[in-house]
Length: 181
Image (cartoon, rainbow, N blue to C red):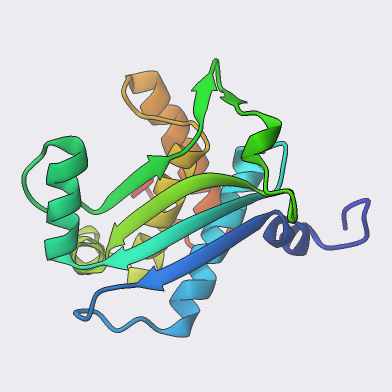
């Protein structure tokens, strides 16, 4: 129990508001996936705390949409698994935001958007030999950690981000023996 009288899980859910939007028709989206996505986002706040409640939009997309976004925003051709569009900038690991970045009604800071390609998620789950629940949560956690200011441009950053992803997934019972993917 935390000092405010709620379980750690319940308190972290109260610190993140996740809107999940499905715009693709290729992969059926069970309601349990929406819950898992929200839980993965909440777990990321445990491994990478943020000073205020946050909100995030997560879009579940198909191959065509993802390839278009990848081309438009990263200048890369083809489909990718997850894209993050952070609204905040970070300096030395600290978020750079002002009072105007907080919603006056909720107190939440909008961290940005995450787009997950469900057909690619399904392919990767099969390729890595684990379930779709794990792969979906891995991609949600990966995107969320980017919104929280983390990256994997250097080997050190990559190791740190991989550890945080695995910690978040392990807390959900989705650990993978022998690796972070």
